[in-house]
Amino acid sequence: MSCSPPLPEEVVRIELPTPFPVGPVNTYLVLRDEPILVDAGPNTKEAYDALARGLGDAGCAIADIRHILITHGHLDHMGLLGRLIEESGAEVYAHPVAVKRSREYDEDSQSARAFYAAVMAEAGVPANVIDTVTAESASYRHYGAQAVIGHDVDDGEEVLGYHAYHAPGHSPSDVLFVNAAGGYAFTGDHILERMSPNPLIRRPPPGRPRPKSLVELQQSLKRTRELELGWCFPGHGEPFRDYRGIVDSLLERHEQRSAKVLSYLREAPLSAYEVAQRLFPGLAPQHLYLGLSVAMGHLELLETNGLAVVEHRDGVAVYRPVDEDYSKEVEV
Ligand SMILES: [Zn+2]
Image: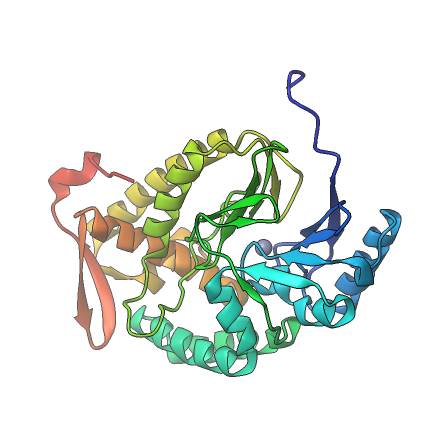
């Protein structure tokens, strides 16, 4: 790596604590006449204090922030946003899905819980486990807050010298902000060096079918592989350059896991919950949704690739393999 260009000096990484299993989250300060903050951390005192300290070390304060870019609409990346807007008057830019959901935060949280309870029931999760998971997710609500975001950013737009690429899969609102002239990009949780971004089950826009998150994530990853990103500043962990290697190993891991899920289905038709329990034995309720998203992602991928079919039994979606002879042709 000795031939790598140096890290761009205008970007300062500030790590904030989160109450989530993922650990700390990154925010970035871009040192300009009109300072830019990228992402906003969770809505906790600890994150706020760490941000204020980090900005102070760089000679800046929350009130100095003029613009805020949001990489995606998850609580660890934008929970503090409402407070930061209030204290700085900054202009904020995010994907339209994140804009809408943060504007309607309270009612949106309720409709999200009802949607996810129905998804879990269809996935075969027992009612008492659904209750535990729903209560757990309600307890996370205060790590976010309502925020009114002024600017929609969609695929192909230019914002403050950054080219926006919509990269859905981990969330519907993932946006890469690429600064070609500076040789770097803010990549959020779309690609991470030491973690596999979860293809989280998510709500569709009104009147549309539920997106197949893993299928969509793979499409986004394949497009990302073709982009010129330079240094990648991720949502978690240190900056990296080998995003193509990360994409390749993620796609390979998906392929292996899909083959594993297909082998389970050959033993017996299974619901997503049963697949999640086999993939992750002893899965705790607080991690159930992550495990279920992985299981469902692979079942939908197998279905999309013509290797599995789904049928409903007493309201539960059950998957079985199409044809055992296809076992060597799992495509991802
Ligand atoms: Zn994150």
